[in-house]
Length: 209
Ligand SMILES: [Zn+2]
Image (cartoon, rainbow, N blue to C red; front, side):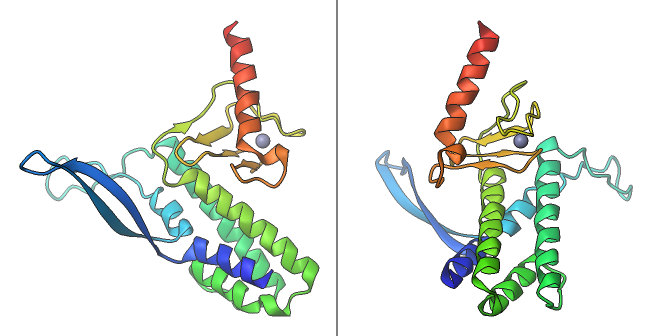
């Protein structure tokens, strides 16, 4: 379990190498495939980067520039990042750890202290850290984010409309209201992305009919 906690913490905080193949044409019009390797920041840093406001160009030199209005999804990413940072602080406080400024340092501090935890508490921490990772995954690295209009969240006790966010790039989803997540490798059916996709299809078909 300690290993699992460390692995999730690494995903959240550590930069990692990401490589993908890009196919293009060289100047002699030969098809070429190149491996492109980049260093990606940890998921929390990626989440935070997606909330950096876009600055509008100042009208004239010397005028103070004002941030352009943030797209609504950036605001969601920011509030999700805040929520994770607060939860990490709560964990640090409850474990009697000195807290630091960056959420990444606090996550590392948590990992360092996990050997002192009893099994039940360690399991609870692992659960929560996995939830943070799923939140990050939905709100980062997407090319298309699908927000099914008017469809209520299927979670009993939530049911909020317009709150589902589906990352079509990595097949993960999140309800911004209750924080529930859906993934490809969910342990239970309720958290499976396929089940959510079927549910949304039913709801939208019914509306269209
Ligand atoms: Zn919900």
